[in-house]
Amino acid sequence: MVRYLCELVGVSRSGYHRYFSEEAETKRQTRHQEDEEMKEVILKVFHFRRRKKGARQIKMTLENQFQITYNLKRIRRIMKKFDIVCPIRKANPYRRMAKATKEHRTLPNLLNREFKQGVVGKVLLTDITYLSYGKGKRAYLSTIKDAETNEILAYEVSDKITLAIALNTVKKLKRNGRKLAKGAYIHSDQAVHYTSPQFQKLVKKIGLGQSMSRRGNCWDNAPQESFFGHFKDETDLKSCETLEHVKLEIKSYMTYYNHYRGQWNLKKMTPAQYRHHLLQVA
Image (cartoon, rainbow, N blue to C red):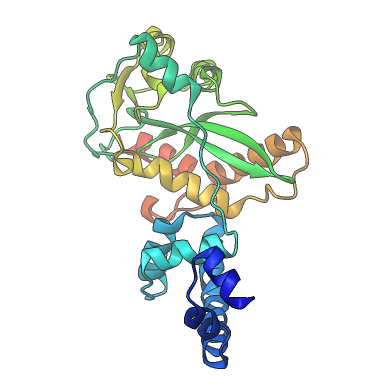
């Protein structure tokens, strides 16, 4: 019977008996125990800083943050074995539309990382980030930040990442009536919102120039990325159940950030205090 079954599935009789030997069973148990231990390490890294990661990001985080080196193939095997799955970003329909129409236009990098130019209201940084809240819900935050004072001049919150979120942020900047410096310009990455003809037309209409980071280079807009990092660390969005609760939490934080949160590199002043200080000494 064993011979017949082995021939049926193409396995040798010696291989069959070796698989069920005590030595082979011990090896399998040992390897499974090692896999279980490695799974716990990978899960710890997978959730590090509350950001889920793929195999390559896990490998880099292991080496950079935990000084542990695992083979990439081994990491992928463990993730597959224990069903550790990183969410895959869906293709951005607006990016596809931009490529199809060919109307979107990138612009030169006028900033070149010269974030501090000694002038209030000259270099404005803008970007959009996603916010997780409640049970698996998502919102988006768009901001405009004065690079000199770190002050948030305008922001918009939405449950959709459409062009409107970027346009509304600029419109709020205009409505706020903040006096900007001569030659002021707004700097962003090359996201489809900012290459949009509508966005570029609006920016020009309110008298601003426009600058863009180099493609795929987050350091060209580092202060804005830094703000989003602090914002996510210091707000409590998980307890928010509705978008309105999210907006209230963000409004409270913006007041705190601009008027009460001192910053070491602003001579320990808040952004609003530092703005007043620069205007007085100018």
